[in-house]
Amino acid sequence: MDKIHVTLAIHWEGRHLDGVEYLASARARLLPGVPVTHFVSSAYFARGGNIETIVEAMLPAFESNDEVALHVPAWRSVRGAAHEPGRTVVVGEDPELIVEYPGITSQIDRGYTLPISGHDKPTIESFIVTSKLLLRPLLSELLVRRKLVVERMLRGIRAGHGMASDMFLAAACNAGFAYDASGMDSVWARAAGQRAEADAERGVEMFAPLWNDWARLWGPQEQADPYFSNRGAWIGTRGAGINANTQPFFIAHCGSSRLLELPLNGGVVPPTNPEHIAELLSNSLESPPGVSRTLSLAIRQETAEGCLDALLDIEAFRASRIHWTTNVDLLVDLLGEPPVSEPIGVRDRPLQALREQMAQGNLASSVAVAPAGPPPGRAVPSVVVPAIQVPLLKT
Image (cartoon, rainbow, N blue to C red; front, side, top):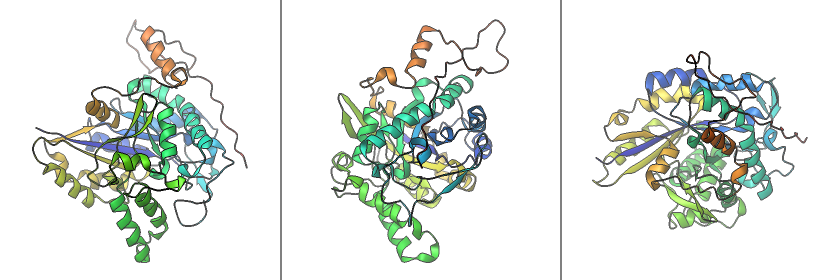
């Protein structure tokens, strides 16, 4: 029987850690054994504070069969970028936002509403490299305490707000990522933007610029504006653009490696609603014999309590053809093997040292990360966490 591959991603966008306790309990109650892909912003670890406390606050939401990927909103705390885009993804100027969660003092950060693709190439590359370094403490703890495997760490990337131009995608490919998951349903976005502009009473008109940007960046028209440069998506979809039926395709090349696009064809809940996803799922289940389909969904960790129950109440998710998977496992299933051949900067990739130490059975420890209560007579491996230099915040 042909499978309907369903991936569920959780977007950790970097402002706070609300919703973690709910996610932990809801997964045990609603999604027992179902793996999810976590796209995590490194901003959580770029603001000083107690890193161990921050990690402890995040850990309950992760399980051993999960995947951890990189989310790249343009928080100033991550990069301290002097160059900033002249536009935001919402109406108005980029606001100063209060950020607070366990392990840090309440503080102000900016840059969240600035599109990462609006930055110049060196800044985008710096965001990616710095983010990979900042996530090391979380990855190390997940490796040892949650038993996540290295092969499910930092294989995927997603641009903040889904705004991944050709420049961002090229930087992701050069940084060794195997797939991008920024692509949005441009047909839905165009309709949503038009509705928001026409009906101010709905209270969502401030997001109309973002949805209109999605419609341009991921739509069927090739864009000349570098901010919207989309030749990779245009070629990969043969000029059709991304919609709810778009399946994975290659979107960028770097040397001998290719970057796969796993489009978020089901959307993020909210603004996408469960009724829309139920319709998409029903259409997938009615596909002809011999046709396998992929449906990718996402929620945000802070809004999980308001939408996860409603999402999983969709009866079609209980069909025998539904196969829950992570993005990286889907990638391996589609391609037969991981497409990354360590082409660029392999010695500098954040988890390469861990791979080598694990292969040699030699994991010396400089950080107390081992779980409590090891079996008698068995040494518990732990991981060397390299020192991290947090970039200065330019004001």
